[in-house]
Image (cartoon, rainbow, N blue to C red; front, side):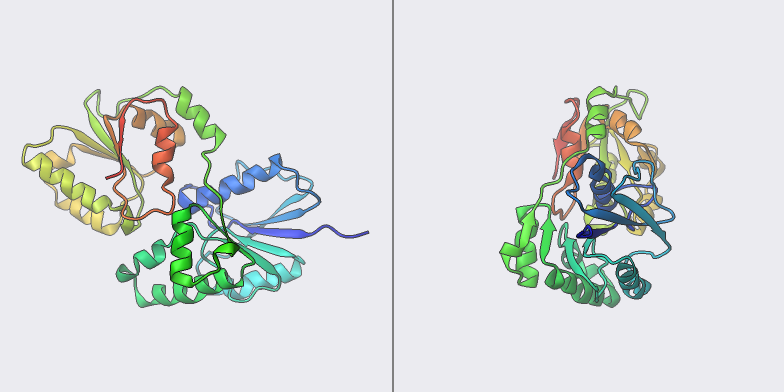
Length: 302
């Protein structure tokens, strides 16, 4: 009897706070219980600090918990050992932390080329990591998945990959979020005063610092009479600028560094304008998630 092929999905990027690649990987793993595995056996690698509430162990779906942080030197040694020990036939990495050597076939998902776009702002160590390990991941993979034709063209441009080896799979908003987005009632974040809302994170390309600068200057010049709500953690540049703002600007800004989807949806629905000032996106999921909500505010991707 022929044994089932074993597929390993590396989900170590998933943490308690889901965003970006972590959310993508979470949805990928969660969806496995709804598809016909066609005799495949799936092994999912997770770190111990992972949010596992959406994961259910099935007949052909098992989880292995490890203490191997992604994007580290140690993963270059430990992940290949696990793949060999577990007799994995195909390794799928939905992010950038690819082992240089793998004992099996592999596929990788490259969501965007932000790491090249932002190289001028990174340290030399980052440059060498992305230039060596991401290039190796793309060259070694039998198939490269990406989120958009824009990202596909960028991968071909920067790495010289055969376009025929790249498959575009568009991102989908999860059903639970859509249901919340359609049914959740709007809630004012500023006691019924008008406000702008934006989703950000610590990466510089999200351009939160520039949004704060523009907002502050318009308030100071009396050209804007509105508040600002930010969802996500600020980077050091944005935090530093915010500390330097005058009190009349600070009192108009509210930051939700941790929030549930339910809370975020209700606050966004109450906003006058949704702003997404990112400098670079492979797909841009936040505006699409905003679009799944019943219309109650305008959308700007300026």
